[in-house]
Length: 459
Image (cartoon, rainbow, N blue to C red; front, top):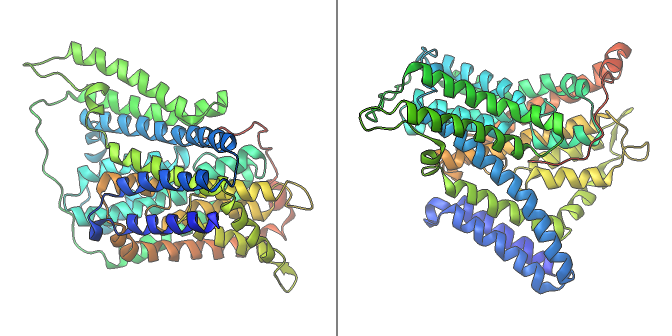
C-alpha cells in the first residue's frame, strides 16, 4: 500500500514540475517538497526499520551531494570564464550567422566535447556559448534543446561521457574499445537525425547579442588564460578519476580551487580605476542556486523509489520480455533496453541501470561481458533521457540556466529526441545482427581492452 502512495505522490509532484508555468509555482519548490514528502511517507509506513531508513537516507544523500557539488563546481568554473569574457575567444571564431550552419557546428562540437568531458558539464559550457552568439531567447531555446540531444548522444558512446556508461565500464560489463565501436555510429545517428529535421526548416541568419559593457574590459591575455585554465580543469576531471579512482566531484573541486587562487592573484594585480577583476568568490554570488536545489530535490525523490524497492520491481517486471525471439535471433533484451531508455526520461537513469546490473551478473546465466545487452543499455539509458527536459542531468542544467518551459520542450524537442532515439536504436540493432555477429575480426576487436575492476564511486 505504501508503495502505491509513494508512486502517486511522485507522479503528482512530477506533474506539478511539468506544469510549473501554468501553476506559477517554481519547480525547485515542488522538487524539494517531493523529495522530503516521499521519504516521510516511507518512514511513517514502517515498511523498513527506522535505523535502516536513516542509514539509507544518509547513503543516498551522499550520492546526491556528489552530483550537487559536481554541478556547483562546474557552474562556478563556467561562470568565472564568462565573467572574464573568456568565451569571446571562441565566439569570435564562430563568425557564421547562418542558422543551419550554426546548428551543425554547435551540435557536432557538443557531441564530441560531451564524450571528452561529460554531458552535464558540456551542456553548461555550450549554454554559456549560446548566450554570446544568439540574442533571441526563444530561438536560443531551440538551439539549447539541440545541445541537450547532442550532449546526451555524445556521452553515450564514451566510457567517461555519461554516468551510466561509467557504471557499466567500471563494473566490467563493457570494455573500452567495445563500447566505442559498438555505440559510436548509433549515437551519431541519434544526434544527426534531429539536426537534419530541424536544419531543413531553418532559414535566414541569427541575430547576435550586443556586447555587454561592465565598465571593465578584461585584457585579451587574461581572457585566454582563464578560458584555457577553466577548460583544462574540466578536462582534468575524468583524468583525475581514472588515476585516483576517487569521485569526479573531487577532481572538479580541485580544478575550481586552482582557478580560484589564480583569479584572486590576478584580481589584486590588475586592479584598474577602482574596478577589480572577478574572482570565484564574486562569481558564486550569482550562481544559479535554484537549479542546484532542484537537482537535490528530484534526486532524493528518485532515491526513495530505489530504497522502497519500486525501481527494482520495475526492472524485474521487464525480465519477462527477455526471451522474445524473431527467427534465430533473440530480441527480447533489446526491448528491455528500449523501455529502460524511455523510463530514464521519467526516473533517473542511474538507479535504473544499477537495478539492472544487480539483476544480471556477468555470467552465462545473466549476460556475459560485452554482450550486446550492455552496450545497448548504455545507448538507451544515455540518450533516452533526452525525451523529457528533466530526464537527464544535461537537461536539468539547461532548464535551470535558460528557464526553459517543460511544456515547450515537450512540444518542440521531445518528438525530435524520440526520432533520433529510435533511429539510433535501429542502426545499433542492425549493425549488431549483420556485422558484429558475422565478422570474426570485428567481433574480436571489440574484446581488445579489458575493463577496470575498481568499484564505482560516482558523480
